[in-house]
Image (cartoon, rainbow over all chains, first blue to last red; front, side, top):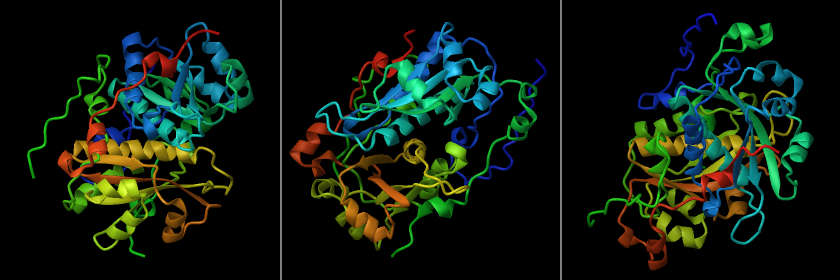
Length: 196
Length: 196
């Protein structure tokens, strides 16, 4: 593999006091198909496990590929995601349980809570040198069927790829053009304090 | 104020390698009504700002109280949340934009992505010594009206309280009994790798 260039975060001007784990997290597509030690892998989902959730319901579920199921997981992704995700170390799907454990009623916060778990997983991954990349482009019908999940009780939110950063030369031209940390809208668009 | 006891995390047995920011994060109800420096406050929402989202759409919005609107925000919470949240430094609401910026189509990942932003906000808060507590118990109709949001375009996900940890003696007996870091279900309930 050719040497991977350092990542340029210069387009991510941030306020002081913000931990770099947030500004230096990004979602590359170029990854390495290197096996991840089981202890590292377990730490990622363990980080997600301690996330906050409504009624501490912990509605998140993470399904992940093994050596023997990697190709099956890969085939559950859209064709365009398959072109780069084939080089990831691991593929997975994020699922939310749609009813509360304690009373069986619908949990309208399940996806929101699963997002918190996903962020914890991602930040822990970065601490260990890995990267994640979420994928909305998956064959949802096929995922429900493969994982044996009923839409009434579970929601397949998205897929994800995990791995060490890889060589951008493995990507298509179009993907290479996007292989850089993305910017954000101004803070005042998302944090609103104006008195009404 | 009486001295606040150290938090007992002994019920949170975690795998090695997991950053303590995840296992030592919790959601107390007892908070202090101390003003938070503006730089600290901005850093929390700045941390959320850099979270990942589908198409980098950044569908999260955080509305927060000021000195002059604190009581109004407080009155938008359910009565039981008001009993403790009145002592928080700041109250807020988390809102997701329901349509993509780039094409106006429904964004079914908006709540999930907002959850990632919320987790970043919470972890950054803990780094600065603050705590957060999410609240599903809010008067949603009144929040939509007060913030001027239409359900077609926005979803009010939940409320939250933010502040330095306070004296548990300010809580009701029932709240005091719950004022401790919560446990979690076993890892193998949320991380599933079994070949099918």
